[in-house]
Length: 174
Figure 1 (tube, rainbow, N blue to C red):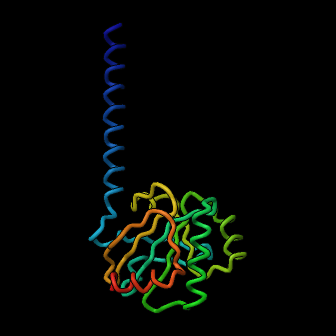
Figure 2 (figure 1 turned 30 degrees about the vertical axis):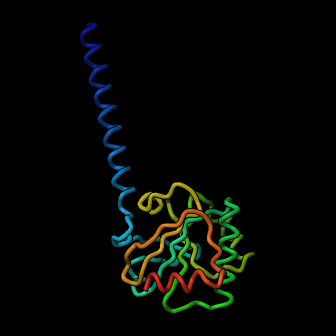
Figure 3 (figure 1 turned 60 degrees about the vertical axis):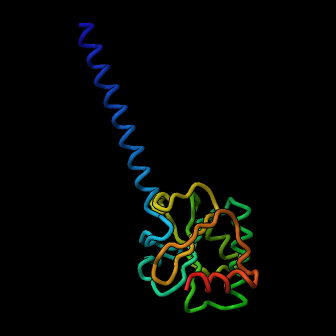
């Protein structure tokens, strides 16, 4: 009887260990999908208004893919600078700010966007896209060139309305 109990415990332990190794391996594979110098992983997400966005459809534009949350003070300041850039320069044909919510409530963000007068798309992620891109915190931004190649990852906030930032990006990403 004791042998059977030990055998069952041994099998259960082996299954738990094997399962945890497979889960870790899958997580590593997901996080390795977004790599500098390779095509940016495609995705399709809806924005807070229900419109579907697909990264693949934005080839030919410089994409500033920004992960953020309403509970992040740096993110709020960064969103204000994004909107200030757009207010001053309009929506350029060759560049788009595409923002993705990270661990946030779309209803809270919807009110924030209305109050802030934000005109850039705000996509709702269920956690899959942020996992693919290996997001650890916010804000995190990925710069994708016109060919869809991931060129840079920026940790932390950027002052997008600084008159030197976007022109420099255009030179680097064109």
